[in-house]
Image 1 (cartoon, helix red, strand yellow):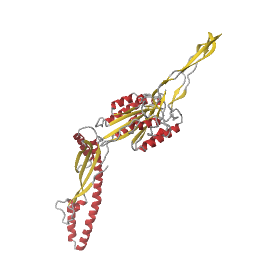
Image 2 (cartoon, rainbow, N blue to C red):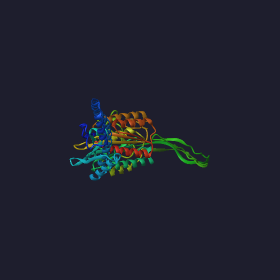
Image 3 (cartoon, rainbow, N blue to C red):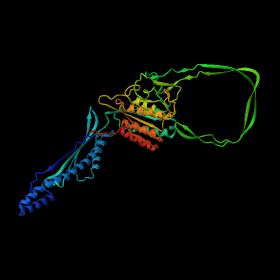
Image 4 (cartoon, rainbow, N blue to C red):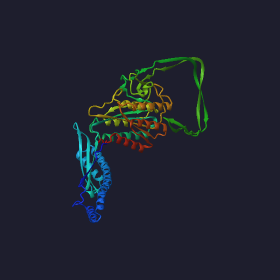
Amino acid sequence: MRASNRLETSGNASGNASGNSSGNSSGNSWSRCWSGFGRDRRGGVVVAVALVLVPLIGIAGTTVDYGRAVELRGELQKAVDSAALVAAQGDEDFEERRSEALAVLGEQLRAHPGLAWRSDIAPVVENGVEVAVRVTLSADAPTSLLNVVGIRTIDVSVEAQAATGRDEQFDIAFVLDTTGSMAGDRLAVLKRTTTQLIDDIAARRAAPDQVRVSVVPFGQYVNVGLGNRSRTWLDVPSDHQTPQTTTCEMKPEVVDRQCRQEFEPARSASSRTCWDDGRAYECGSSARPARWVERCTPVHGDRMVEQCRTRGGGWVRWRGCVGSRDTPDDTRDANYASRIPGLMNVSCGSPILEPTSNLATAKAHIRALETDGETYIPAGLIWGWRALSPHAPIAARESGAGATVRRYMVLVTDGQNTRSATYPKHDGHDGDAANEIMRETCRNLAADGASAITLFTIAFEVTDPTVKSILEGCSAQTGGAFYDAGDAAALGDAMRDIGGQIARLRLTH
């Protein structure tokens, strides 16, 4: 922010001993004091004292009154900053926003009821588009000691300018954990808070294409969608059916069955701890009463018969799932001559939504998300990066003349890495290795100056301190922020804060 500040004095500063006929009681007191000194028989001493007192009063007045003026200038600067932000926000007519800004100035300056102030609030227009609002404010700060030497007021002037964001474009990738542990209330809360964030940001749109949204659901893998199958950056085999094989062997013929009744005693319920996507839950068997059951055994004859079994013949299909390229390409958004491997007969949940300015479509896509699989956060992180960078595989838009594209990634997860890369799949169980891949991907993302992505991360009901630390470090490297959301309310607060940071009105001057 650049503030234009000015302190100027007004009044008679000549230091004339006769005083000012329109001066206040302080001036009259000085005149009486001066006359008294003039009648003193020790005239030389009087003159000497007077010559010393006048500059001393001037120095004291400068210290006291200018100090007060500087303090007032700080208060005025806060007032114009607030007024500029109010005048720049919203989609109302400028005169309505101007009235709101004037009301803010009045409220901010209520602590100075006798202060005479003047303001000007005007739009800054470039190429026919309102890109900012400029607010200037000046006031006459009354003096006390300087009034003795004829300086009655000090002019204080400040200025602030806030960008409206109407000339900016925003690309936002929502990278959302849709693993098994998110099922139920967690996913419902994530859907609600994410769509609300889209609404909050969209409220400030000046043009339909100003905000574009992409959605990257992730679990153990990411689903890039069947429509990308023929892309040059992707390596996917054709769907095919495995050949059938039949094996036969000679076995004794079954000619009868002998059955009998057996008594099974009652069984009490049992409980044990099971795990799903790194989260514990109680499982076990239910209680069963005592019962009689029938047990049968086959009776074989003397003859041998041929028994055959057919295996294979099933389909091998691609469902949109992709794995990781070999290191170091698995942590980089580059070198797509090394193609991304498509994984056959693998489940990977809901597909990604590539960048769109149709925010209704984006919200509908989020509401339709379903949970699947375990957690491999690097998969979501790298595809969120790919959804925002201005080149393949998805090729997001670039900044053009007069329009700056600001790129943001919002990553939400509810747990630690429960899977690790085995290349091309993610079916390992080395959490430390997955964490290191995550760190390296974050370092490379932060170094991508061409994309300039700001990363916001949210740990939603996460208890693992290592993952929290990694997420916080990732955000810090890109100038974003980390949120430790311990419950649904905290997740909503984090989303609202992120929305405020993305769509915030910035003081530019």
